[in-house]
Image (cartoon, rainbow, N blue to C red; front, side, top):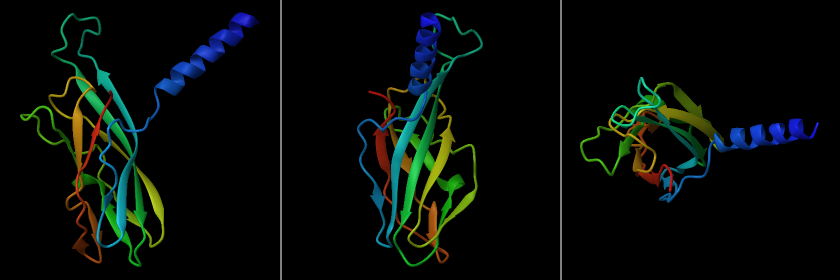
Length: 159
């Protein structure tokens, strides 16, 4: 009985460690003049190993970054978040190209509403999570057919 409880507690701890966590060294939310605020509410970063999981080299390792964004619309108009326009740039490796998310829906955020948006990225050429990233939001939010100006949000995948 005691070993079953210990095993159950260990499983809960492992599962808890695999979830989202607060971003490390976050630049804070991006706030537009129109009243739309976007913040990184959670980060989950992991490494996909190459074909041989026990290899001595990490040449084939690929970081995966999942983000939970919180979008708050305090304006009197509907804001539309175009997931496919958001980019994740790795700021430590200049040669790495900004990554597009795997999904590309348009999400309406009604006036006075706050919504969570989950995005998943596989930034090419990024082998691990100990990097700095910039979430580029330009042209990703529109109100009444016009782009909402939002500055990039910088954060670190892990400390």
